[in-house]
Length: 285
Image 1 (cartoon, rainbow, N blue to C red):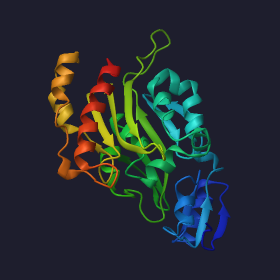
Image 2 (image 1 turned 90 degrees about the vertical axis):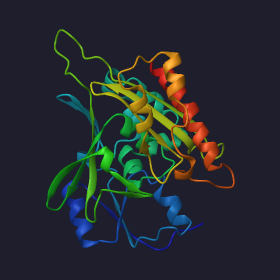
Image 3 (image 1 turned 180 degrees about the horizontal axis):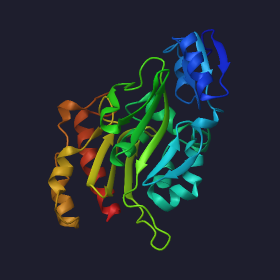
């Protein structure tokens, strides 16, 4: 299938990309294109213009700033997974990335593209919710940083406004490493039940243990990725032993809040969340 006609622009800098957005308010940003291009081929999206930001240097790379890992929004999954900084600070993040799609998707798809697209079945939204990430958003009037808890606002809807670009993902790492004592790697685990054809999550659960305690989130089952507050509260101040984990991972989400389709019912997805949460927590400990 072919897309509708559109005008193609390639931005060489973040400033140029923002200027192009102002000049083309109905344009869509193109990075990896693994979500946008299929939607355009199916005529689910017909933007009059595309602005390619895949080569904007300000949107690429992984670096450490103080107590946070900063990932450029146009950094591909493969680049994140192969980063020595990521492997040292969050060893489980590459493992989570390996569950996304296939090698082609991981070498073209981008972290920021997944988060900004906010597909209900995407993996990274739940992972970043569990990691308590902050999202940096740039507009013509300046930059702002949004907590991940308020970033996902609905199906395919985020806090990124008109004329704005998601530029960076900041993951807090806890206490900074000194020259003598390296920081403790952030503990995280992600478990998913993939759709056998698309590899998207029928349900997925991410859990992370940091300085602020346990955070957990699920994806694939609701209109967007959401925190598993019931699980966090059930395990607050308690040891993560198998018996406690098993007792906490029961009826975590009301099926009435979840999606249902001809393949997987809401009740089945609710059951999957319980099972995947238990598996993720046991991997965490």
